[in-house]
Length: 181
Image (cartoon, rainbow, N blue to C red):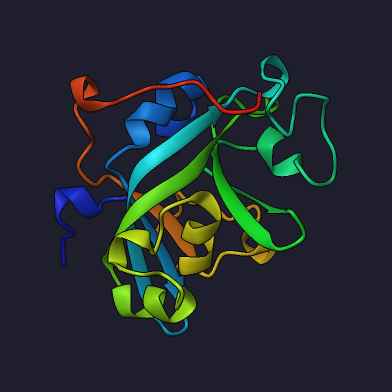
């Protein structure tokens, strides 16, 4: 069986570019989380670029640590961190290996597996809120530190992968400043 063009995994070369190029190009792409209960797919609608040593808001700004080591690795891997003692957030690593940069996945639209996402996010008032915000997105997809380092470009049965989807035209992408940085 041949997958439709929008359901093909993105190649690693997609992520092996500057983070400020990758971030807007991720909008409209599909992130698929495979769980024992079934898959959940999200069309990415909001992202945020973190440019390593050039970015004081980046976890890699002060160098490599055990927590951020994945950011220094091969592009196309998932960097998951735990924040505020209660929430997980996830990023996709960009740029060449050895230079840390990543795109925070801030929000998405559930396009498959909404019933599973609803079970994980029972406080969501409607389906638009299921994956609105980085911690809610991670919760809806059942993401935790066990997925840190997952190869999102791998073929076959993987816990998480990023698919081609339908990229958003550049004219429709909005950019704004980050808060608190």
